[in-house]
Image (tube, rainbow, N blue to C red):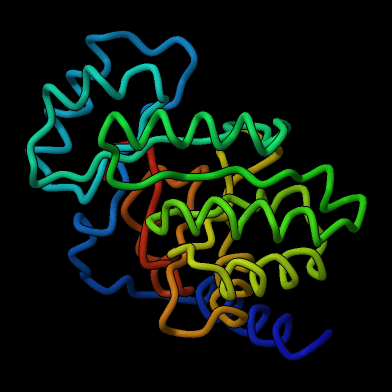
Length: 228
């Protein structure tokens, strides 16, 4: 156990033993997501309607729906889409093509999936270059590291790389892998990146109590497809 994992383990136990949940207004921390492959136009309209009523911070949708969403969404809600989603297994030039297209459509933020295969190959230089290039072109980026597929060592290394880039957030998960965010992983990432950097917890967060516990672990953005 090293310094970061010790902090994360301590925080995880603290949250799991919590008996009273504080009342936190979390709506302006929520990215309300619709990333299902079978999403319909009506689903998108409902997403925007709920996000507007709840005053959520942003909606996060697949690129195909961005032009339609742009016509419907209020200027008070940020429009977020995804690059390299959900596997991250595209060459960088294709990810950049996606990014430039989304920029032309006027998105406010992107959630970018790293090349996880290169992490497993210990080719951190490739991954670092990918993250730096994406975040240089579009700083309002959240970098998805897919924690469910990583060792603690890999989570720590990637969090440091993202922290040293121009990106704004480390994001735990796509929600399409083995599992989503955990209290431990959120606490671990927060310990590595410090207090002045973004941490987005995403995947499997379906109720207010879990969302608040993620925030207490260090998340300052919550990704969810459920009404919180």
